[in-house]
Image (cartoon, rainbow, N blue to C red; front, side, top):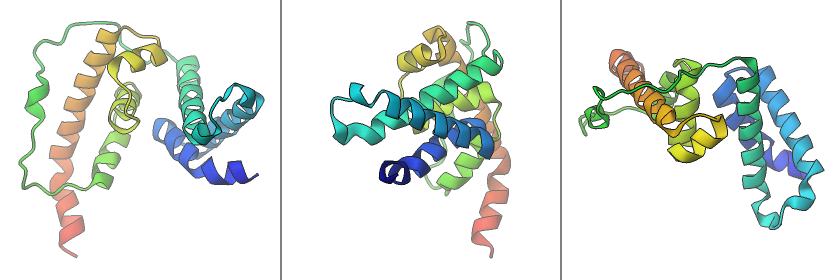
Length: 167
């Protein structure tokens, strides 16, 4: 029970970012704990238990998403979009919570990849393996998702500023 209490919130938060739904996130966490305890003998370094369970819940969440529907667009070329075009003025004051809210509003196919890359710190190769996609598809979806995220931020940042600084 101590292990559960120690890691349940971290695992729930990781899963919730994918589902944006309490019931699905709770189910994924419960299943991840069950899988983890069933395979605990495979864990070589018990000091890494939290990271190991975290990876299990992410993989399980992605498995659920994959089984539900095929949300991924096949490989295509996006040469017109440049990653360098995503610069904000350094003086702009945008909160992390505001950015997370904008990520939550993205379509699932973009949200999942952005979460894995920006928040969970996976690289494009690892994401392609997790999602069973071509690496070029992951890169393209990441670029498109980032462009859509930046559009949301630009569109809503005035409201964010008023909400945080005019109270």
